[in-house]
Amino acid sequence: MNKTIRNTIIYIVLTLVSITMLVPFIWMFLTAFKTTAETMQVDPFVIVPKIWQTQNFGNVIRAMDFVRLYINTLSMVALRILFAVVTATMSGYAFARLEFKGKKVMFAVVLLQMMIPVQIFIIPQYIMVSKLHLTNSIMGLVFPGVVSAFGTFLLRQAYMQLPKDIEEAARLDGCSIPQTFFFIMAPLTKSAMVALGIFTAVFAYKDLMWPMIVCPDNRATTLASALAKMNGQYQQKYPELMMAALISCVPMIVIYIIFQKQFIEGIATSGGKL
Image (cartoon, rainbow, N blue to C red):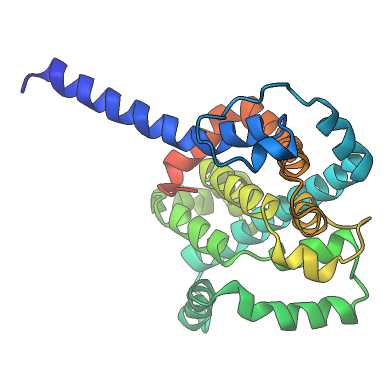
């Protein structure tokens, strides 16, 4: 098999996989403009709506306060990224470059936290948030993401890959540990920070269970939680539900278009996937 045929087969397979991944989004988009009767039809050939129902958009806008939901969700995402990057950068540097008593045990605890399902921490986290009177607030939504075990591990690996000569040269020039960290080592791990920010943003944006528990008030909840409540309220109104989901996708699509270069570089640098 020559190179041209092999490349053609690869491109065909990748194209088919890409189309397969786009099918749910296309289905959501088309369903958002159908009537309820069309969404309940069994006929698989009824894909495109016969008459595009633009009033579904108005119905959803009147039923849900998207401005407040956008503000709540984007505020939570921004604060989670800020806290996760700051705490993970400092703790990752400490575990990678500094020597202190109990270092291995403490890092083992961090790894152990990554292995335990997050649902186990919901009850103690809710008790802490309740005691701090942070329910139905942005800080209550941010609370579980203040410290990231995954971020600590990711940044530790990034610092361990840096040559020791850089740090030793900084110390010979008279830099203290904080100066070495802030002005020399931290800027060199910018790609890992971007990767952590991407992962944190994606997981925070689609977080469902915690917002439903800590923010039952509709005025303080997020997009994912509001969509889940809408699904319970309008069990058979799939066009409205798909229209709300389509509107909820807009912020992440816009953010990806603006930061797509950093997004791709961050994923490639971290070696992870979403």
